[in-house]
Length: 411
Image 1 (tube, one colour):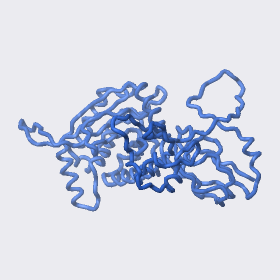
Image 2 (cartoon, helix red, strand yellow):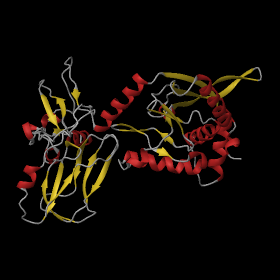
Image 3 (cartoon, helix red, strand yellow):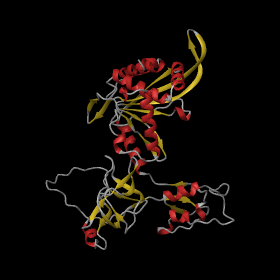
Image 4 (cartoon, one colour):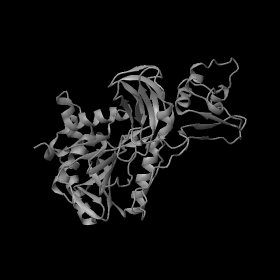
């Protein structure tokens, strides 16, 4: 008997998914556990395995297209099985951003809808002012191969340029340079929000406009931290970064200031006894925040190894939902990009997020004399509903003590 494979709900905030890649085609034999497709959610792109054995009889969502959670992703059954009746009887779920309460005492019946699937398409300005419709994958391939999209003929719906068009493209000898445009002519490209970018926009906009933010800034003398890191990295096989030291210092400081390690949930302050630190990682589609769990019980080396593993998983789109859940405090470090000072938006439901700038050599006053120094700027963003200024200031003082005296984090 044929089995319906539905679009899975791969994260707690997922509303719809996009098929980034199909690993099987109609007619292929499927075994339980076989990799079926890559699904792009609002947080990451994840591999989706089959739960059934049989033949892939139907693909309900083409590569590059999106569909709501629980809609038909595929049908697996016996070879030659008639599935028309099954497809006809299954309604398409609607995408809803909010759940609206009604006064009806009886359940609302399911209404069948013929809403079309959402196709992910990038529009590119042609040199003659017209628009080219391109799949995200085709656009990326064209950029990597230095191909001028205006010279490619699309074979997809409505002339949409897809992967096979890039694969089959043979440049002419007189092809124009990539992205060339006449002098003085305005041009632009457009692309729709990815699922991740939608989630970032929705979550952080809600945080910024509902949570009353305030910011506390502090400068850290990093001379001792620089010396300690140099000694640690020179003595053994383990190499640590300044970010590893910051994560460890934050974890230790949170243990001494539990009122910072809090969440705001439905007009309730949740004081977390465990310390799970989210570390913001930039990816092409936006930002993900994998979590280092029980960070206060780990040393520099273990924290460094976990952060490196999470960064690799984030860059290769291998992060799982559980890798990004449960954080009680977040850190965003832009020091490696040359940023000296910035503020971040609190990542709900957390009460705080720490922004870390780069280390800058600058004149400082020590013992009444101006001497060369190494300064790092920190900014603590706080949700005033759960954290007060004095509480945040005390936390920063403790954090400063750990970073300026790293031996305190070792003994």
